[in-house]
Length: 310
Image (cartoon, rainbow, N blue to C red):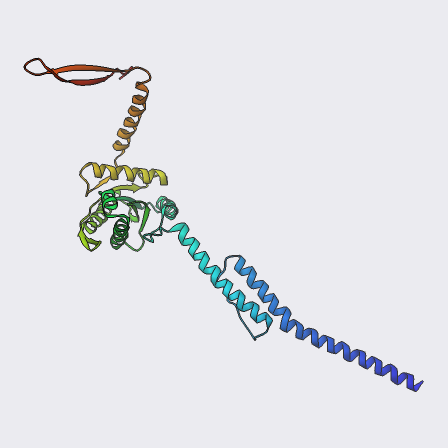
């Protein structure tokens, strides 16, 4: 019986020792594997949410640390890829200026802010004069160089809070925010910046090792008075820019509502003119031209439009 009791106590002691050993091994397992793996999972979760600057702590040199090293490299690559995708989506690859998409986002914010704080802003539509002649005659590389230099010159004329974007081709747009609360003074300030831009663009630049001189035409539209939506604002500035070109280029014009009215009337006239031919509203008249010997030289031709109402 005594021998049996001794054996029993020895067995219980061995069992307790084994349990303590298993507990100690479990703690080591948690500290060395489970917790690091949990950190890996948490890091993956943060990165999947777009937080590419999440701090990755690497301790030791075991297999889990190797996983963390690989995750660190992946984190860096994903961050670079995200930045590259953002740049492609919102910036012009040639000039590095904001593109149309980013401009529209900023314009919407500016329109909202203008409605709240009652401060006027302005949009300047800038188009280089005779750019197609340079681009076709000198080559696209020279044209691209001119666009890059023009972008830098426009930027040099603006405040830190202003935006200059490239819509495409040789069209640039400048957005001026929070000029003042008086429309007349806002127009003066916008015109001053526009004249500064025109003066800067006029300065000779070197293209293909040769000096060249260039000019631009600018259309200006204030908001919120003449631009309640982004499309209206850009359309009105574009109309004003074409008016500047029509008056001789190398100048700027403000949008005038009468221009829009005249344009709409012209569009209606064009639509009616397209309908005139199939509706037989056009008639040809010929006036014969002769010399002093009555020899026929040609004819003056008149196309008369018999409009039903005009």
